[in-house]
Image: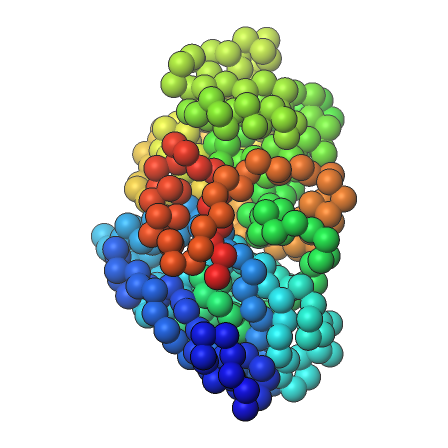
Length: 371
């Protein structure tokens, strides 16, 4: 045995026996604790975390949203205590037996794992629809798959693991997870040449959707957000027009731009009920509506718009299936440039400040924590 930094003893794999980690105990009860470093079993990968993003879903979980804690009749999703964080980038430091062959990684590789760890046995996994796995273990919400707000993270044998180029800067590499979700949402929209596409919400996911939608060559790409600074960034990423619903009638403007018909595609990424109502009013008959957001409250709409009045195609979009290799490639080659999305890099100990920054959204877009 040797002695690690800060006087910690090390395991046979060279990692310390304990590590600093944020631990979720309940709503508004997140603590920085010293916990054991996980040890990789057969097929598993132990990785040292380089950075972990704070997602809007992390904020909703922290604030006690019913969708996570089981209020108002919803099933309980969080299994506390658990280490949060699913937007991580890391480096492999130890491999369990058979892990190199299973995942195609070696010690020293820069690695990432899809946010869901499929069970491989349910109906959806057997059909190849792993992102809808019935068990649905996602890093940072269930203790069997602790997340990346820690010094080390373990990828289970069932995890979907990819290598990441060393030369990709941290502030880009940490966006692979959200960009994969953005790509999936855009793919669901089935954008065609000449389409008028509206993306509601210019947060990290919405901005990724702007970059992905731009690659589809729409006729007109419109972005909506309540913050002018985010709209300006959306223009640099690829938006043709950026509109603020707080200062103008965006439904009327889009109708004006389309000869009174409305947009061909509307992708909802603002996580607010008004964005859903706005989209149903804005989209044309026979249009395609994609819902990606995770809401903290119920949304009420006139469903007759969907059927009787417009006969819309409504698509859900969940996670980033099959999109991680694309996200890595697009960021590496600069096909999608998300420079400026990461606005804050904080030490892990300042996780509460990071959560507050994301909750407010006035000063930040993407906040990352670095152990």
